Image (cartoon, rainbow, N blue to C red; front, side, top):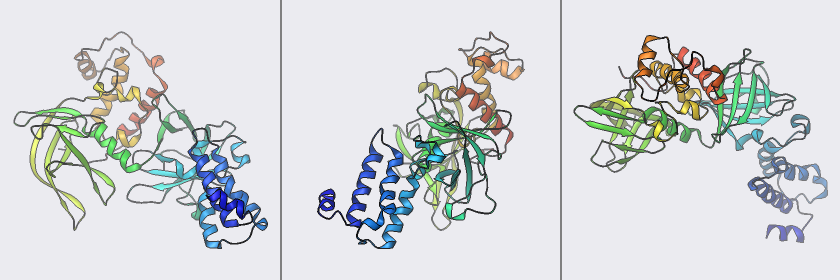
Length: 398
């Protein structure tokens, strides 16, 4: 219908603009679509504005161009190649706590963003001759703040190498390497920061089988928002939030509406508290103790085809936000479990005792570094970084 209207009035700027937006959406939806053409379709109207009747007000034009210009591709910038990673608001880059959107500037990509609670975060990437490699520089929260001194909010310093690539786990990642070639940060391409954080709580913080002498067994399964053991039958639950969007370690059982706060200690054991929401303060208030539960095992190996308590480290690229859901003790076991799966012989008495108690462990080699995959090397660097920090997503149980 829109194209028919344009055919009847080919001189109309408005009708041509509507058709350009429709064609841009069609191009965007194609599996093999030309992302650069999405922005070019409306830009062509601007470049040839004198050929049309001026029947669209300037404010409407400015709103459209402000959005569609995000899709413009500079041949000088991308060397004539389509690069889907930099289509601004179509990709959200997330490190587990903060998220970023990219915009194309004259000679670099500016990334601005923040957490679900505050903004002001930024960094920039300078292109290199290699399509998937960039150089880290400062950036700005938003394009209209460009100028003056910027910030580098991700974990890296100006001049570090940043590589963007996909892995067999199906994800696209932005990986930051320091001058020594060690990974300092990883950002993944996601759809929604809040949903990603909720999934991380389910899969990394809660997942496990726990037991109590008085309360029986409690089971949280990864990739499944149900809990067994709180009631007689498995119960679906939701992850509660603060300020309307920030996920917390409080769950609410859907069938009863009852809420529970869950705190982990350094061993991975949990304390479960009754909780209530204080609307005036917008906080979850911890009530009486429901029970203390000792972790029997994590249940990751029921999802990943690998032995051990932490198979994710060898199966998927992790980020610092996800790793910050674990204690230092858990991170040390997580890191060394990678080597244990390859049969490394441990010299540390506690690690030697721990892994020799695992039925799958077979000590054979003094050094297994040459066996590590790229995913494992990335994750091991990140784990070491988190082990050195004092940051946790949630307070630890005492």
